[in-house]
Figure (tube, rainbow, N blue to C red):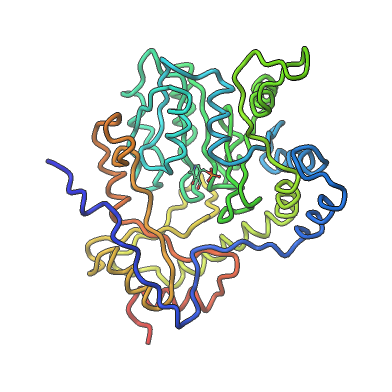
Length: 386
Ligand SMILES: Cc1ncc(COP(=O)(O)O)c(C=O)c1O
């Protein structure tokens, strides 16, 4: 059966009612030490990638993730690219990853000239389905990338078991899941490398920025080397390998350090938002609440729901209804195999990814979201708001 793309491709963005206060999908909290540390950078002139904040932020973040090393970079996308490059993955190699993710995960593989091999996701966790990985492994497979979608960890034990059996690297794309836990372990610390994003809507932000974390010294040293244009130790301006400028600036790290000081508070706010949504939305026919499996601590980066048929109206109709009340929402990712840039090279069937894309919606999940706003949003969804 041919897929009806119209049921998947995004409808035009609904018009937000701007007469009422707009309740945004997310907003950063920047009222800690951000200005103080930034001012220090400006006053001392340390504004590029040298300067104390980069090191302090890296040390603090490695501690937060419970790993030995953290290598700061310019974005989550560059963290993923650097991860693959540091593992020596390139042309002729295959990398397994879920189709249901942000385009960055796939781009990183293609930047290295490796072949993308997609796997479908689970409807329960939105993450890669471990039961569908092994059939995609060939003698060219070098790594599996898991993505901890919207703050919920993937099934790491199953993935690690497959990876060990076939001697594959595991990279965790934890761009959306700072502080999430799998059986008590922080995501990013479980595979060989973890990659984080600090874009403005993330759990902590540096404006733009990212981090690669690992407990492997060799990987850490290679990542630092490639991040900094592969400057040779033998002499300055001497390059024997192709490197990248993926450095984070001291200005970004200054913001990052201030954010990191409050990360536990930020995670509590995300979990509190989810607690109130769950309370007000529980039992609504046709609305599937976000997962939190028995093994998981979900950090609910975004409060992500599925709108099933028995809800009565479609996901897009619900979006329009919320927008009319000034409530901003986002649809779920459009799977990689349906992206025009990838549809020719990624064939195959990924029905769960497509279902997630058709039914998924995330609700306002910002740090400034009030309990009464969550109640109001829930009432609009349930059809009981005035
Ligand atoms: C799952 C996932 N991976 C990677 C990225 C890329 O991060 P960045 O935007 O910092 O490049 C994102 C960003 O939103 C993401 O959601």
